[in-house]
Image: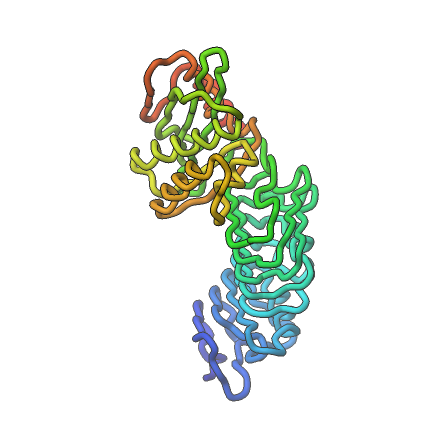
Length: 361
């Protein structure tokens, strides 16, 4: 089919696994904004032509001999906002070949042998990155200091050979959402203290922060939780007394379960669940059965998570969890569970205010 005479065409959605005789001539599509399922080897572009209006590019490299065409194609799309790559890529494009405007990127079945993070972390406006189903075949990924300055969402799914994810201090300072799944060999599934500032969730999502405190003299514990929207506004909060515990991990795990029960009862179904204990958050995010003394509590948490429409698990530094921490300590002076709608107790108001200032800094 010839597209070169369709000069006003703005959105072109090609079928999956299409076959063509000759080449698809796209050199006259100056107004093209969306190009989906394109196979680089099947298109013909005149020398010097650029897709200056293209914002959304979806490239299919499942067929062989696509790599050279891929490098050329991404280099002539200087203003794309969203890039999707599907299929084997032996050599990833260099930083200078990518649009500096890319904010969303997805890699699926790319089977990269070299860590793509070294290149991706240099994209200055990248906010969302999803790598899934054998996107990378190596054993180690590294996010270096100052890498991914504006990344807010990272999803790693189906990395069956990955054993280590190393996040250096100062990397991904803006990260709000981290999702890791089916990475069975990965030891450090959640990097510790990725961010020290509370960050709001994406629109239509809510963030549930929880924390625990141990009151040894009272032989009890305290649980605190707060749910906020993408504007940082408090939707609901909770403070409750817990039973005596043997360690902080037990307290935090029980606090997580209580916080999720609270969120579900309050009617929230799309949640980013955030705590500050790395051991607990690893256990909560793991897809494998937990045989520790807390296995039953972890199983309860997984059941609660399965009932949600959308879920993301992340770990935050204590400084990014200050409101939940204050609420957990507040539980020391109460005799019954306390709940608030669209507000927090006075003792936590200053922490909410500090978060609202820092989240926009």
